[in-house]
Length: 261
Image 1 (tube, one colour):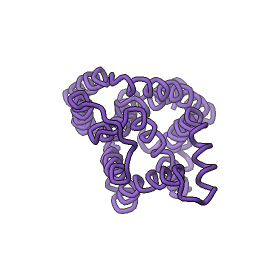
Image 2 (cartoon, one colour):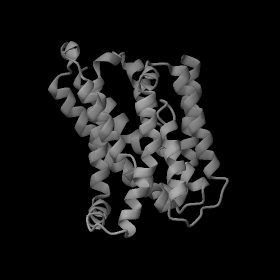
Image 3 (cartoon, helix red, strand yellow):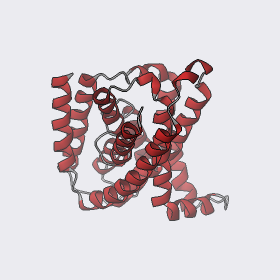
Image 4 (cartoon, one colour):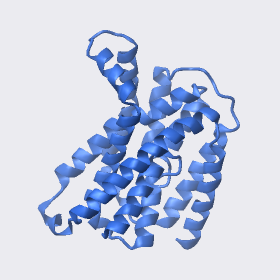
């Protein structure tokens, strides 16, 4: 992988991780267009995902700090309740990761028809949010679990994680700002956990497939900077309810992917 390819894929990851257009789906499309071997970029994929985790922490540093202070007060306060909701939302994706890990990984094979169909599902979810009136709830426990199910379904490349979780939260009549905040905070631990498992499973047999350090650095920085910008922009868009343009985009890319696939 050249540094230019790393730059492009890093930008794609950073922008699409937070924008509701599916980062995994766009990475699959990028791999096909750039003719990058799937087996070659496990380290790269883990690294750019970690970069987006850091960008999330940067954007929500104040909130994460407050949650940490409240949690370690060891009291059943608002912060402890919020963290508990995040942990509850992780159960579905944890179940999928443990029970169906190989099946999920088999989906990341450059299948443009699968990605295209999943992008159409994402488009339908985003359009649905325009048909309901925003609520004022602050993510109750049951809603947190249902949003977690949406996150688990979004392991399919082409179904946007942020699109699925934010749409689900809005359809459940939750507050727009709270929907965006919860969606971005709930993904931190699953991404870190998935990266850790990938590192543990990294075998010596793939040692010859390492990507140059320079390309890894370029990809990491591109994903971090673009992720930070996309995250702050997405929060603003959710508050205003302007998600229909992303629905149109996902529908167009989905149809093109199916045709070329």
